[in-house]
Length: 87
Image (cartoon, rainbow, N blue to C red; front, side):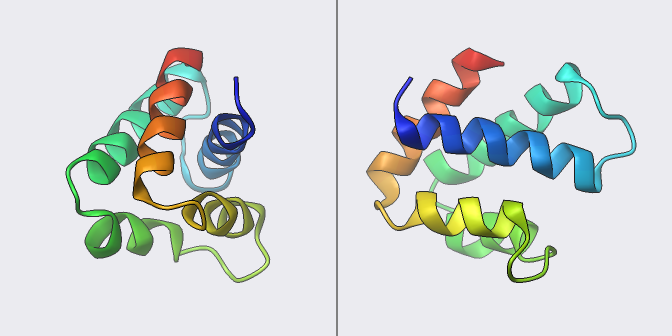
């Protein structure tokens, strides 16, 4: 598992802990599927960024997302794809 994939997995876990009522592996799968669909279907800027921006600057989810986003959309898709396999 590459470093960006690890960051996506970590970010999803933090995301679920911070924002979901149900906090289990199934919820992680649902969140990763939704976010992966957004990244791979070209609506990252329009929708996914807004889901992440509910967290304040400096929050672990926000920080990890910024790190992952720096590498471009193709690397993000690859990282999310790898994370799907982890869940």
